[in-house]
Length: 552
Image (tube, rainbow, N blue to C red; front, side, top):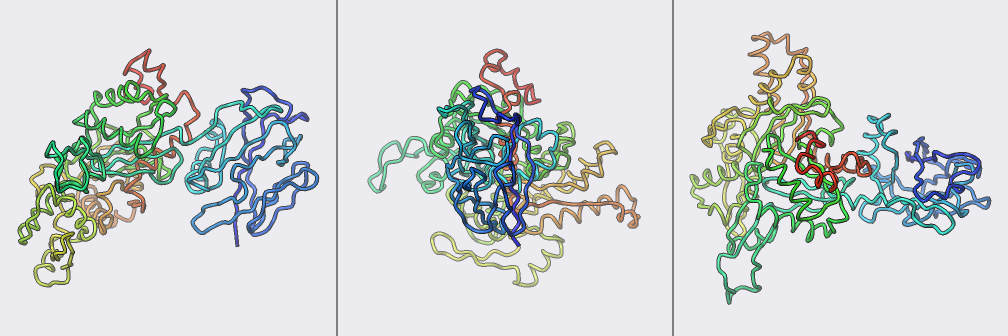
């Protein structure tokens, strides 16, 4: 049985003159959102304000003879994508009673479908969203993506307010290993590329090379030409260290990948926990001084992760390529003094795997073969539930051994290394890093929080980042947290574990959770000027304008 949820906005001014009588070019109706449901059949309508006729199959968008509502042909798929045929760029109006759409002159809405995301549109005003925040947030995330919406007023059809175009709002998540960038409202980054910059080892053109190397190579091109390039990473352990190279990365993202004009866009940037204030100030300065964005906002990565999960309170474990953070968030606010940090993440595990393979007899070049070893890690590695038992099993049998074919055709065998390398997340001493492992950081972080919020954090532990994608990590983490809670809090009383509601959320798209949260936030706030740091704010206040992000 097909279920369609269609959100239809009625205008603020619903007098007898309707929206047609308002010729104010700055007038934008305040939309209220009733919901019309259709269980597998059409909904009858008339021309005096009835619901639109929604067909169960493909249909044309056409008005009835009395100028009433058009028939919207829809198809509802199992992936919850609602696609409209016949509405691409179509113009839909309202009748004089502010009711159903018609095609009779005057002011009309232009529902232009986003060319990249053919999904149902939704438009609500900010005040209405705040009033029903939890309901609308769920609908936004799981059912609807905003499309192009333009208000036309008067007979000449001139645009009264600017187009609410998601492609004018950029979201950029600068990670240690990868840059994820795209536009507001998207459910997946437009571009994901390595955060790496390469320069030719030789300053002249080699005769054996098919093409001349550029002076600067960014992203995927570095992997293809890694034998001819001097590779550098502008971000180290989550913090930007080389701003010149970071500028090359942003140039590549904005001009080559997204192909935008920054002077016509706003940008939402992500900020790692415990990032030095000087780095945030440098980011804002670069966005305004070099790229001339019209608006900038910077948000903590952990908060964005919770937004992507539809949460405001929870404990975020963010482990990417350069650093692992455990961040408590309550009502949308993080606690820097309780945030835990461990300099063990994807890059360190890859390097450790290089050492382990060397002990097995496979010599890997740390620079040229690093990407190859990273691929081995992503395809074969996992987290053991019980490290000692798994290691003993690996010594006594060959059941854990897997074959891997290298790019040059050689086949290597990988056994206990599959779980030994990522074990560094729980036992950082394996790679000579002092400090607590992931489970210890989580337990300490929650227990140091005030007692009123501890149970909420235990119930909402959210995994984020590529280094949380290992099979077996959630179950191992749950086991170790329970062991510590039993030992430290309950003093061995196992009956007390029944009262602890421990939940670890491991969403399948957690590799891009920070970006997803940023896209949701930017999509909701794209037309709220008080939300963004404007260029005027920056010119008047300098970097003190960061207080708008709560980070000055």
